[in-house]
Each structure stands twice: as structure tokens, then as C-alpha cells.
Length: 236
Image (cartoon, rainbow, N blue to C red):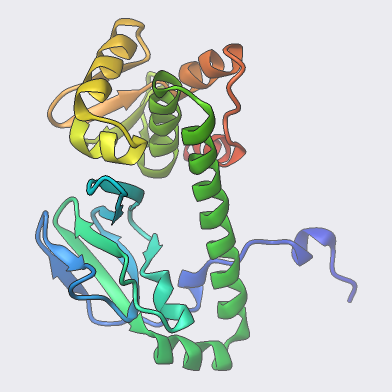
């Protein structure tokens, strides 16, 4: 039977092919691995959120991404190099499963579609990271904060009836690490966006009006990465 182009280019989900493993639990702010205790495993988040960060040139921490439920991290183990340059820390009380490189290789031999799914996943992560790097190089801090909030809404948020997207609380310090700026600047910019009616926040949550932010950014000539828009559309 002739396969359609839709079938040929469909996206595979790695979790479809990964077997269940015992669940590991990490308390909030617990380090899962870091340069002193590197990991040789691929992880999936079952519950909670995990912050993946690396040391910046000035000695601070730069967040590469925040991984939520059903997201993978620790991918460096798949190329035989433990994640020696990054730190994975639980932002909440977290539950994860993990597989060593040899286990992944065995599963790929038994089910080649797992290899395809992992390759597609890694490509998506690379594109997302490239978009973030480009935004840091091209745009000023106000635009970078807005882009970061739109992206976090797409990755981590839950749609609300009023059209906003709700994030479980993230500190201004964590958002600053994600943007690559200071906590004080993030607080200033979030207060500005709150006055503009584009977000509201408390100690428990952040409600982001992501579509309004996207429209404002486009009016300023800022490119909004398609991956964020796609995530928001899926979330809605």
C-alpha cells in the first residue's frame, strides 16, 4: 500500500516505545545530577518540573530549558558522554523514570521506531534552543522577557477560560536565569506587562495572555518562533 506524505512525516512519540521502569522521586530543589555527579541515563518526567541549567561565563546559571510531565532530559547519555556540563534540579517534588544508554540501545534494536522518535525529539529541542539563542543575540531585554514568557506558556502552561495560560509559580530568579538577565530586570518587566494587562501573577501562579504578547511582539517586528505558537495552539 502506498503511504501518504502525512504518514511519512508523522512525528513519533518516544514514550510510546520506552518500557516502564521503577519511578524515582526527588524533593523540590534536589539535584538529580550535576557536573560533580554526572548522569549516564535518559530521564522522563512523570510528575513535576525539572530545571536544566549550565554555568555561564560569568559564573552564573543559565537555564537551557524547563522540562515538564512527559518531557525527556539527560540526552547527552545517548552519545556516550555523560551530561558533565549541565545540572538537573527538581523545581517541584518530581517523579521520573530513567534508562541507561545500553538499555536504550537494546530497545532501539528491538523497536527501530524508538530511534526515529528520539531523533525527532532531539531535532525539536535543537530548534527550540536555537530560537532562544537567536532571541538573546538579536532582541533587547523587554522583548526577550516576553518571548520567554510566551515559550514557557506553550511548554508548561494550562489554558484558562479567560484565554490566559496558567503556569504554576516560577520565581523571578528562575525566569531571569531562563532569559539570561537579572532578577531585578525581570521583576521590572513583569510589573510593566501586568500594568499592560498581559499577565497577572501571585506566589502560586502566573497567568500569561500569550496571544496578546505574540501580537504585541509582531507589531514591534519581533519574530515569534513557530514552535511556541504551535504549542499554544495544541494547548488550546
